[in-house]
Length: 52
Image 1 (tube, rainbow, N blue to C red):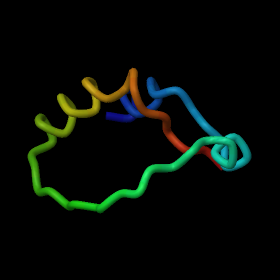
Image 2 (image 1 turned 120 degrees about the vertical axis):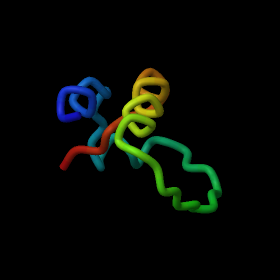
Image 3 (image 1 turned 180 degrees about the vertical axis):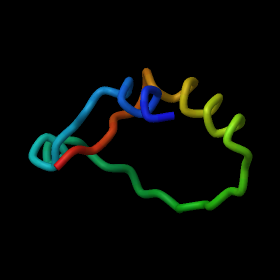
């Protein structure tokens, strides 16, 4: 799982200040590790991982 997380492009808090954020509603889900892995693989080209 760590390798998959590390495959996301990073974005810092400073860089985030230039990104227009959408209004959002947080929704929580319960899933298996395998489904989580599949979801992350599908999302990794469209999302960033925030770094410090």
